[in-house]
Image: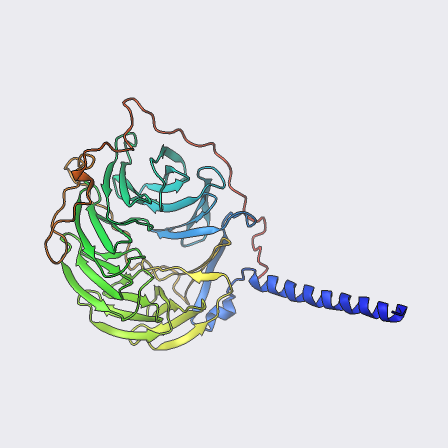
Length: 450
């Protein structure tokens, strides 16, 4: 081989390497989170209210959960960093490392004053307003999800299908427990005075939230893999059998059911007098929340995002934001969203939240809607005068539809001691060391877009 041909070969390889580097660089740039510009939003009748970056160590962790509760937006990373933002301004209110970094973290669950988290095999309860740790307690078995909080209890689901209820004001007390049929991998859901949890056996169990005791269970023909929604006095449960069920939350009696014909893997949303649910077809369905009568159906939508004054917002399977007419469901426009961003289900206000596992969150609203339209707020659980049921005393009332008591999967029929019972004088685990969360980026706008 001549020197000239060798040089040409080297030059060709260098050019090829440079081209591949440019392609890789472009791909990396495209994968980076991007902001929705005000010009882009305005074309769809929207404006960007704010954006924020929560603390995330990009090399080791990601955000696994976002939750809106009243006027707070919470994020949780799989390394245990929980951050609270003001949902109207994006201001970071506090950020806390919960548990040991690197331990799997689940949550959060919230009530008016507390925030619950699970990290490793411990339950942590924080002050919701300032992030201060109030107490932590070792769980007796592996948790399957984060906790749900009522006014008085923190409920934790274990991988065995067992549900534990811990008194928030006296965590050293032996917990209430109930052994469900099947396993559960979803966080229990509190809806005012009721706490519910689904299992892989196709059941949804309902218990009193502040005086635990199983009231009824709903049996479906397939798994329930989404959390139910509530608009008292009704519960709305979506199942992979394709049905949206509406039950009386106190009795479990079925008010109506609606068949989409396809499996449902996203939570329903109840806004005003409307129930919205999306199937894997994909399509979104708007139903009368009281009767179940279909108002309209729009193909192509994978889940509900928010409802404004005259528009319903949804997401398609590619992550695009769909703008629909609220009365007819007819498509108005479609806004492309940056790769890696997705919409939250928000049935509480008219705000649209675009979130990413890298910690970027953006808030959009309709042009001129400076003050949020509040559709509903999480129900404040009722405090009952009756004392909590004894551990294992899961009194069952009539289940939905047929009036039969839950099958003998209750811990009430077992005399074995709870593995969570603490010896007299036992002390709740001490708080973990306060380990500072990663600091957010120093620039006001780390993304370079105005």
